[in-house]
Length: 263
Image (cartoon, rainbow, N blue to C red; front, top):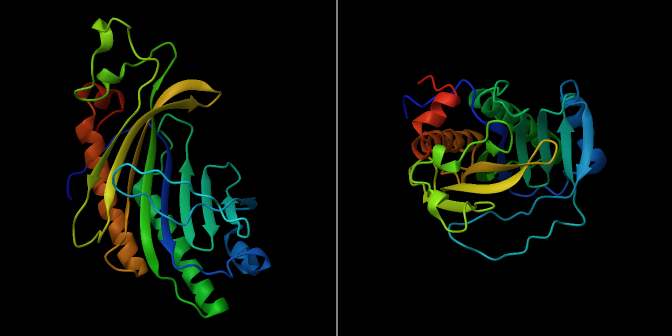
């Protein structure tokens, strides 16, 4: 998709770009020492976390309880400033960028995708050389978390940000204390494969030092058409295009001006 919109100061505060692969049980503990040696120059801090669920979200409403595995570990490889994070567990690799909130330091999607591709390639070589196994990419996911409304000296109304947002000024109870809504858009193409969709959610949360705010989270995910690394990266590229176009289409021109739209 040509001519994607671009913003000088996007409201993005975090990006997560990841892949799920067929489980490699050996990816744990001391066996990861060679991989840490490879990554520690720019990711020197290593932390242990509970694993993420090994199932994916699906279109439509669902009720499900996901319990992390008590026998497996998710490893965080962190940069010194904490902005760059690589998460690894026996069936998942995720690259995160975490910003300070004004979008000025966002390194752009190309950098994040390149980082994921590089780490996935290194992981694939490591697994093949150490465990004689081959990575098969089963699922991809790209998420953008954006800060849209923070209580402060210059607060926004959501109707100033989103097209067709209700104007509650005349409601007899006044404005709602918080707002939450979600949309699922199916994505169908030869690149993205099956069960692919974009989820757009608007919900309350807290920013920084526990300041109430509203967040726009956009997540594109699904099965790639091909299980190779190139196939997974192609699916993520197309998912990104749909995500960025949707961001522009659901938000107003006045919001675009504040975020410094350049194209």
